[in-house]
Length: 281
Image 1 (tube, rainbow, N blue to C red):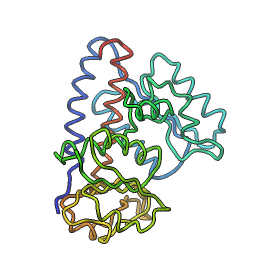
Image 2 (image 1 turned 90 degrees about the horizontal axis):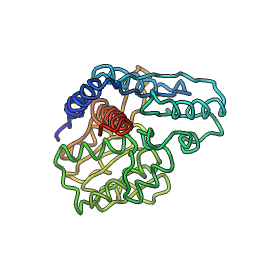
Image 3 (image 1 turned 60 degrees about the vertical axis):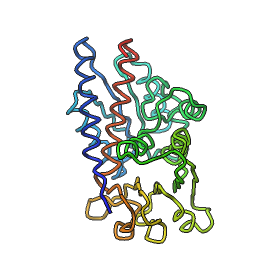
Image 4 (image 1 turned 30 degrees about the vertical axis):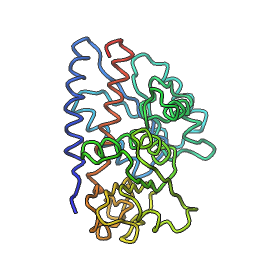
């Protein structure tokens, strides 16, 4: 089994994006990403720290706003304010959110032109219609990894475990757009291991540590692990049991697989939004 090096792919993406940042800075424009964090979730904190570090390396200004304990009205008001701020080019809102506020409802306050993580329902609708839109960064990262690994997508039997609007649903749309044959599974799927084991490409995106074991995996399959589950020791584990994935042709590890590419895709979208807003695209 080959371990896919997500960090190397992220470095390549970031290198290209850094060149675009330099071009924009040459025009006096500094790309700025605003990150609203209304949660103290450990996995979210890990992700936000990674965004900040990666942004600093390529010259993107990343402004993190911690709003733990804020009510629904305060969060949505701040998202709307950031969307209206001409100095801000990208806006994202981290989950989990307070009771009574869904990600779709919160992201509806983000201007689609600044919705660099594809969370606004308008963005998802445009994605479904095949129109220009920013896709959720994690879904975009999975497709980017497969393309950079030169995994054939046309006609490939692909199973996505997970139906969230953050990964599962948008990823299915992206894969269909790439001519893959896609099955989306979830907690109500009957005989999940048998369906998963039919996949040439298997994507696990459910947030359950080691859910995917050997009986889920077809020999020679490409396995993409999107899970980021915090451990008691302060580390992260994926949704795939690495030992069980031994019969796969390739596996994205956790950490070091899809995660770094997700951050890189988010920053790439932010810089793209900056260029478009500045008429320098």
